[in-house]
Image (cartoon, rainbow, N blue to C red):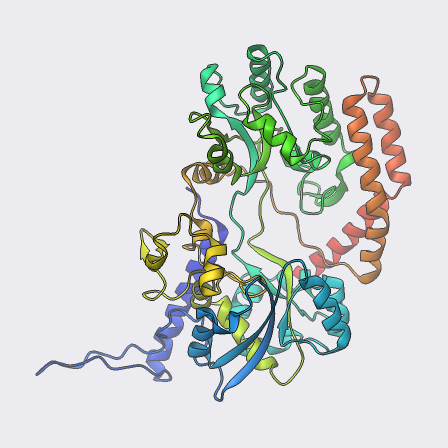
Length: 539
């Protein structure tokens, strides 16, 4: 199986740390503990430069030389995080005591706005938009992380040396980065096409491997179940975004996407590939293979169709649904078997999830605690820190069996997931985890979920990741001003094209003209200007 990129980064980090340890041993610059000696036993050489808490990436623990308390604003329903195992272990290892300011998901954003407006920032916080964070960064309210790289070996290795486009992608015009990225949190596969394998097997239908086979499978299902609509959807207009990867026009900025062959950004909904996708959907709709309520179905109505025996059999959704639906209906239908299917479309590829993201916008306040806060973030970025915040303490909270974490004192818990670990130990706090250990329970897949990972990984069925662009304030404003209304118009056209039998080439050409008038070219020009800046920074 092809290893994910994050695995290679981890191995590289481990090798570099081992080399650094050997160099430290040669120079005598590190501190180590001597092993016990028996009678007449010659002393073994001391192991120098290794930390009892694992690979710290070059940091020496504790991080501070005097007791230090920092404030950290996080999202959590727990009100006693200061007494959690995580808080105590961080203080034990680093010398830094954390005073958590925890707010529920429903109140966090409002509290953050009030806090930022007051000017009394916690030492570490998250949740501002990139443009908001850059704005207060220019006002010196938060730290420019790049000014402190000499004391941040993990940040420097991961986000400067190994991934040199991180700072150009996230920094302001002066090259200052105020956000601490998050690495290795995403799974390889989290969404995709799902199908009722029990129904397919019962009708002698093989899983599709391309778009034509997908179409033929839906036709056979319709023949077997004349009153059914074989494909159902609950994502409304997002069906176009989700299917777009298979036609090579998908991406994180959809409907704007990067054409790797042409090396330019394009607007997806006016491209010929988009029309091909719409034509395919239109054919499915015409032949009653696509549920006519695909633009209006709710979660409840969609669930009823997908869990019945004769309504719908194929959809696009989250892989957790594979087991969720089975557990929901197993008493009535023990043979129910929802499985992960191959991508459709000419590329045959699905969505690629980023190994590095700026999704949380984690920042450090520019105050007397900034060095301690930065060093703590750097420690939590290291392999040792990643294990702590996503798994706990080995030998105390978990042990390793078969390269996975087992929690003996949670043996009676039916499913140990990250919410259980947050509640019991304070792990997996939003705004605190910034790197993940892949042995964590978050990466424990059921048999069906593992099949989904293997299917795309083994076949390397992933669309390339689009570049991460860095927009100016004016560009961000212009995109927001144009994009909302333009995308709404595109979604409306898409639906009409599929549902209205009279829509065809003439209406498509009219839409292309209309989209350009409404700003499609202007948005693409902004993206391509930002791409030129990124290319220049990379050279």
